[in-house]
Length: 381
View 1 (cartoon, one colour):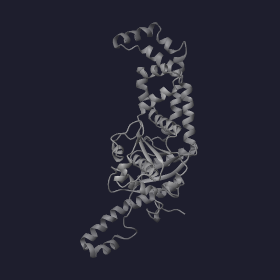
View 2 (tube, helix red, strand yellow; view 1 turned 180 degrees about the vertical axis):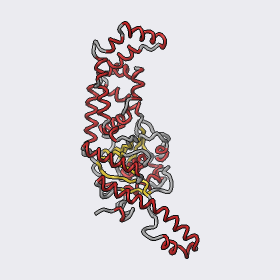
View 3 (cartoon, one colour; view 1 turned 45 degrees about the vertical axis):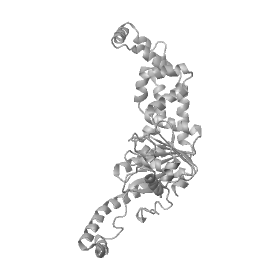
View 4 (cartoon, one colour; view 1 turned 90 degrees about the horizontal axis):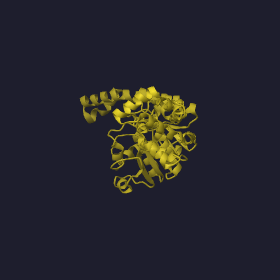
């Protein structure tokens, strides 16, 4: 089954895997491929590098989708029948926008956003990047402005950081600390008692920061947002489990990324979420092709001469070690993930820095014979 067939009825495609496997490039190439086939697509990336913006011909990416110029893509020989949009997630801004949407009124929103403690916590809360990634995904999906949204997930080493982000953040807001501060006779009141109150009063005079007041305002304001966070967490969880949402596990043939891909796929199954396929990127191929080095040297001798032919054959033999390693890695990934037809993208000779380069990756992703292109050695009955 081709990638186009796998994504035919999907609204959301989440590319997941470890960092350093080319996940951002794969996500952008998938979005490009769908847009070239007539869909209106948005790719949401976490990558802080400017490389993606440059590849798409955009001066910069920010927290709102930007349209990739059809004229530019046509000039680069990459006609797009639909529309390709791209954005780079700003976790802090997304979190702020979420507070504004969930606040019962504008005054509550302003109190939270202006609070010193919120300004620090909104960037530092564990899991905030993962939560804001899928919170933005949720908003884009609800707006129904795009046919398909492709999400490049944070490069977390723990797959659960992404899958459990809504639950973990909600637990913070429903936790004991918040309830204590919201209680009329809770910690906030006790902090203002004579002993502690003197300490905080002194800090206030020295620093100009009224910590008790800031804590009180922060937790009181957040108390009005709990129901909204609870509903949003439920909505995000439902989106991740929706039949129109699929996960693509992206890996490279190296051992550590392959192990993480196997782990993540297992967690997806445990969570009842859909793994739509396996993409193995940066795969070495075209080594000796099953021939012995002597056979290759003999075949090249007439064109290159004996000495140079032997050197080329020896070089191919060294490269063939990587080819065979990658074949074994793909075979194992196929078995472990129960994926008989992984999508294979070869190791490219040059970096991807423009739309034409992305189109080269896209051709491998959407090729009808993407698996066969790697060779029969990776096939399973």
